[in-house]
Each structure stands twice: as C-alpha cells, then as structure tokens.
Length: 179
Ligand SMILES: *[C@@H]1O[C@H](CO)[C@@H](O)[C@H](O)[C@H]1NC(C)=O
Image 1 (cartoon, protein in one colour):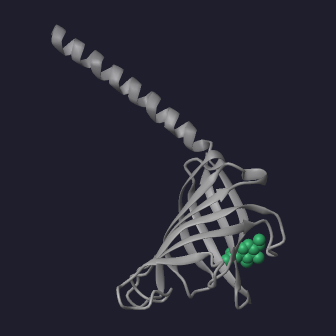
Image 2 (image 1 turned 90 degrees about the vertical axis):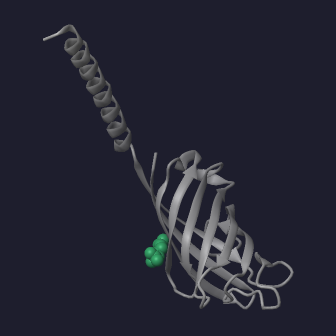
Image 3 (image 1 turned 135 degrees about the vertical axis):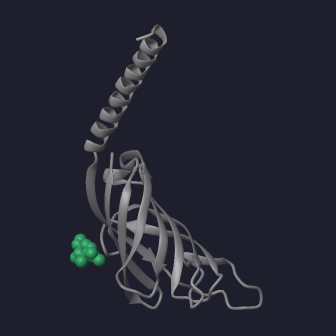
C-alpha cells in the first residue's frame, strides 16, 4: 500500500471510531427517557366579562364564534389539581386557538401548560395540533416541554364537563416521554 492510502484508511477508521462513540452516546441518552402520566383540570368560563377565552380576530362582518372558520382566540385558564375549582391551583393553560376547519368542527390549538405550584412548578408542556372541539374525549399532540419535561413528546386527551352555563371543566390527561 502507498503512504497516501495508509493515511486515508487511518482517517477513515478514526471517523468510524468517532461515529461509533456518537451512536453509543445518543443511544444511552434515549435509554434515559422517562414516561409520565398526569391529569390536570382547566376551569373555563366560555363567555361573560371573566371569560377564559376571548376572540381576538375573525372574518370581518361575520360572527367571531368557536364554530366559525377563521376565528382566533386568546386563552388563559386556571389549572387545578382536582375537578372542583376550589382545589389547589397548580398552573395556567395559556395560548391561542384558531377555528381552522371550514365547517367549524376543528381548531388548531397552541397551548402552553405552565406549572406554577406543587410537584412540577417551573416546568411547562407545549400542546399543539388539531382539536376536534365537539368530540369528547379528543386527543392533541404534546410536542415539547421545559424544566422537568425537557424534550417531551406524547399526547394529551381533553374531556369537557359542563358544570353550569358559565363554567366548563376540561379534564386533561397527559402521557409523555421526556428526559
Ligand atoms: C383520564 O384519566 C382518568 C383517571 O385519572 C380516567 O378516568 C379517564 O378515563 C381518562 N380519560 C381518557 C380520555 O383517557
């Protein structure tokens, strides 16, 4: 073999060695994934002066309602530990949604679950995707997280319970894998 070929093959084996380190370390990181399941409750007021969701944009000259294509809402709802609104507040559900199906049946939801108290205080989860708003339960993707939920991936189910005309509780079960 010539000198050039020898150097070349030495470089190649170094590259393979480095690649194998990379592959092993990324595999061991994947092995550290944890699975977490949790249930939280959102206390919603659909309308009125203390509404938890407010229409912020829509098609000019048309009604800005949940079922109307093209309507965007900002939302900020109290998140509690239990179904009852008197149970401990552990965070907020903050974000926006857009009625994105022409027939009004589905929203695109962008929701941050911001934990402000108890076990997960300071961590967040990011929920994003199609939300078939009139189905019960419905499922939306969890696409990320921070703090204790770094690199979170999974899904969340939402089930709505109408307690009264002005009070709707949404139960949200989250199943995620994260570091
Ligand atoms: C959510 O979790 C509760 C238990 O915490 C369970 O009773 C309920 O069936 C779950 N909902 C869905 C849609 O999986």
